[in-house]
Length: 440
Image (tube, rainbow, N blue to C red):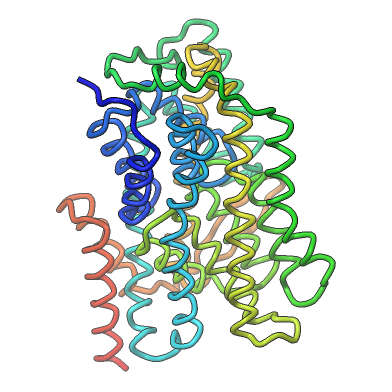
């Protein structure tokens, strides 16, 4: 039995609740949306939900926020998509602004430093657990597992760019589905849902895709243009970098983090690898998209490169600009692309491409987990190149044994003992604090 068509007010309450409860990174957020929108309210059927999820994984940017926007668009078109996408981000962005301010002011205090020492290994466990959960959902056949393995090797050893890996995976899935391979064919929807009725009711409410694209582009890039024209501090670099990341950052939050970490740490020098891990730990404990770690990076970059402004004002401006350019393009991708994707929902080639891209994302996230693991457990890591191949060789003498043990304990807690993310993070942070207080 399905519910009647939801009113805008009823949907507004659900989106606000999802935004406040969206802890646990993309995996937990997607599960929350599935439970509330598909299982409880039955507003959207299982097949369309999975189709929307795969489409959002194809897009650059945070797939969880894009999925919320897509589902809101299905229910109430552009107004529904705007409300769903904004409310999914807003609570976490407000919390992250406060946490970033506290971090800049107090992270060198011994008590806070001890908490973050314990938090880093637990964050590694969270990333590993999320990659395993996504793998169980996306890698249900050996061809999909092969795509994931090839994607990992391509990014880890060859350092191929994300867009190229995603394109290759999509073409592979397209051709496999067109040839009739069952692993890449779309599933049959038997779950019900009132989404087909919703789409029929909204069919007459069409807006010119060109006008939608132009409006979204203007809203997205106007602050970047102002920062470039001003030309002081790190704001132009922040705007251009995160706007570019929003375009090329395929693979969802965890895949994006690898790109942000390499560029923000190694190229721009805005923060250290340890600070990047601290930011990820803060993002893991807040509601909303995990990619809010970008806001943390933007705050520190603006704080340290304020262009003559007060550092605290620079931090707030840097964080606000980062959130704007990171999340605004998601509305562009969804509002322009969703109508066409819905008409092709049963297209075998497209479904196969999306399934293969979802598998490639697993390999990209595994690369991020390995990168985090090496920087958590070892204090020094070398990256020699041999022609097109890159190796990552940790200095064994720099092994941080307490961090390694805490990472192992966090993995056992989450994978074997089935602890949740928040208890694991809390236990690890408390352990780090106790170690700091005992050893000084």
